[in-house]
Image 1 (cartoon, rainbow, N blue to C red):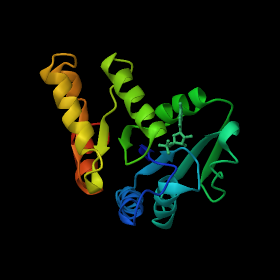
Image 2: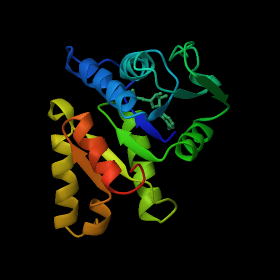
Image 3: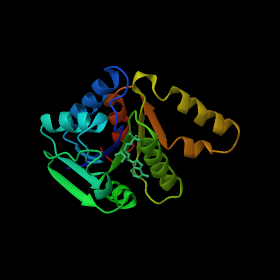
Length: 183
Ligand code: AMP
């Protein structure tokens, strides 16, 4: 089965909107028979996405470094929980195990993961599609900033185009599938 790596917050975010979005992402993966690869936490939006994917009956692989295992409360109900030593090992393994990447609303960790996987694509280190799930308009400012970077000629249009953006999980997964990797 093909798998999607989802980066998202270890916090739930304000209100219910982000939690609902994370659950709908997990459910959309399961509906398509796609496995989830993520950071292995049971808390925040990470936990919501994992729970929804598991409830939908799909495979969920969590990859968690021992240093954050307590803080992020490692999920004990996953198909597979892989404990690693460092954040770098986590990101490498997440990248290896997945066929596509989705960043959902999250904080610094999520942003760091998104930009690392995008810069790896820019350098030609992988050709797996990367998507941004802009639910609740959370990333409106970021998307506008990336377009500003292109206008200022500091990001090439073809590199900006590496990031597909959609407001809902189904549309985003369709876009990623259309790029060939998940089709
Ligand atoms: P956040 O978006 O800050 O809530 O964090 C989301 C996830 O990213 C959490 O599981 C963090 O442990 C993880 N994270 C934060 N910084 C890094 C990093 N440098 N490398 C890998 N994962 C990270």
